[in-house]
Amino acid sequence: MDKILEAMENLSEPSEEEKQKVKQEAEQYLKERYGEEFYVDDLHYAWQTDRWSMRVHDKNGWDFWVFNDDGQFEDTYFSNRLSRDAQKEFKPIIEKTFDSLINWETSVIAEDEVEGQYAKSIPSYQELRKETQKYRQIIKIALATSLTEKKQEKEIEKVYRLVSYLNQNNIRALLLVFYYDPTLKEKGIREVDFTKLGDYQDYSTATLEIKDVSKIKTIKDIQRYLIK
Image (cartoon, rainbow, N blue to C red; front, side, top):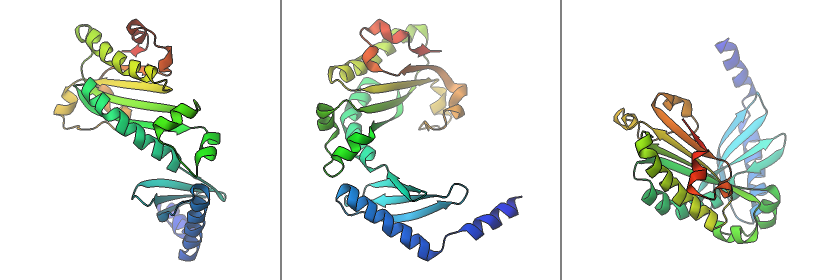
């Protein structure tokens, strides 16, 4: 079976001429959408789904992805720009608030109409928040803390400080905090892969999932979102 699949993949591998055609079309699509020059490379074709995935570099050297499904392009540039801004804004806040931090990440997703409106002049994340509420920020945090009853009150206070910042700045956000036994770090795990949370299930002591931080009015509200 493996040999059959390998043979099919080889037969369906696009020619260099076809790759160059898709590359040029992607670069033209991005230039027309954003009014900037981009360089596309690292093309991947999935014959099972007839889908192209391509890595792209902007003029500042930042990488993102563009995809082609049945001739239709879509990309992550707008989201990546906003997410980088959010990363800079929240890095000092999160690192100062959570002393048992393993790692964290954040992303910002705007609605399609917002991307279309601002594509040729992408505002900073802070500027965008003043203009629209049609976006969502997702924050994921991994902590090396066994959430015992003794520690719970103190840890919830930390989360409340972050939630308060989000609400004071009218930021539409989803917040996920994963609490792990500190032995996780002793096992040599320096970073949690948020796409493979099942790999760390044996170390999990609790999870906090707040789908809409604007619902939090008091520190006691946070306890309702704690899953042990």
